[in-house]
Length: 222
Image (cartoon, rainbow, N blue to C red; front, side, top):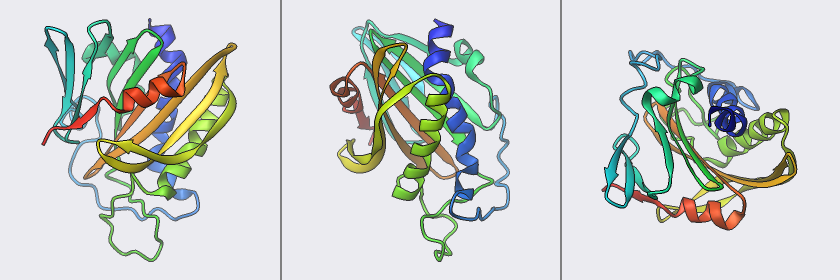
């Protein structure tokens, strides 16, 4: 199980680590004073993490920091907490949940970007601008993802950024179609931001229809 998860998601972890460096591509990073929150997985990133509750017909993941949740099928293998210690490779990144149900794989990781500020407008003096759903940020992340996935052995067939319907809103997301060891794979990646935290949601499957269906599982808590 761990080898499978690492093969599919280690490139994703590389991308999460590089989120805090992404603003150096095309823009200068405008640093902010540290917010006082520790950039430590055990303490500073425990607050934005979600929780999984068991149900009679599966389980449900909820995250109050980002105001979203989704339901997991009873057949899903869910990994959270200590079972994901092998994936906690960077101090400012929390791998919050991974789930696998047949050919569908699902990951939510959270990055603390309190020491970096991003903007898609160099002339914008508002250091609190939300950037996780800007075309600028998502395009940068797309390029980082492609390099990371190809470095892990994926062969790219098609990749790009397009508007995706996520919890009733249209937001830019990364789509990726490639092969790994001759097997066709699809990924959708979308981002959510809450203050100095960015949640990266990665959905993988054998077809675009399956990952699109997974995207539709999300809902707002309020």
